[in-house]
Image 1 (cartoon, rainbow, N blue to C red):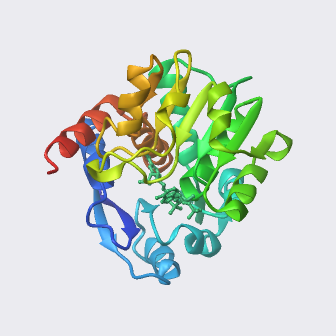
Image 2: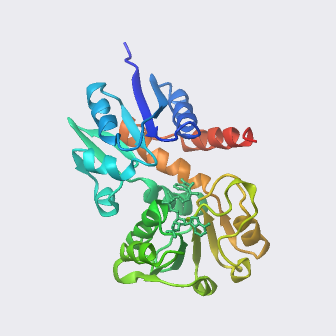
Length: 274
Ligand code: NAP
């Protein structure tokens, strides 16, 4: 007899999360008796979500804004990635303990390595933005052996804190550093929602560069359109979204995630959005 396992994504707001679409498609593809729901949890209540995971024996919990830091403080144990960032996006069982992980960085690296056969080792990266997503990307690129991880951000103090995650390979720069970068990452919301805005001067982009946008709505952002037109390789935010979920799926179920099914589900869901 199989037993239904339930997973949540907790956030505020959480109604627009694509995580239920991604995970429920994966559970169905593997014929698992698991189900995933979006649960609105008010700011400041992350600890209650962690307690609910324990009392309800949830199969796993995804954590989104604004709970990523508070949830990190409420779990039993953190992975090294989560400890370094002080934030979690995935709660999973380790025996009787709840472990908090941050799978965004690993998901981003997979989007480069798995989807584009491109390895950041030895390369120069410029990350635009210094928020939670940028911090995960900076740390992951440093761990992956990038030669330099440079951060561009409008607030200097956050830029310095993000660059510090890359140790002596991290530095704070202006957008002119994009000229010499192998990899350019937009980790700001600029370009979201079809307003046509660019996070940097597109004339700095060129052939031989990989340009990744973490924004995935629209799928082809103004930055990626500009990158493609200048001969750079565009990388959409869908890859990171799907691969970070794939890491969570593996941690919860112990199964190999059906990444193509997950990706198709999210692309289909996005194509029905206005
Ligand atoms: P966040 O923590 O709020 O950080 C936002 C960053 O963008 C900050 O560095 C902020 O600069 C900068 N920023 C915001 N508006 C800007 C503007 N108009 N001009 C210049 N800089 C601006 O957000 P986050 O969680 O890191 O998310 C950033 C983006 O990544 C969002 O669009 C999110 O949807 C996307 N994301 C995608 C994935 C994925 O799987 N593809 C995963 C996570 C996030 P200041 O520091 O100066 O405020």
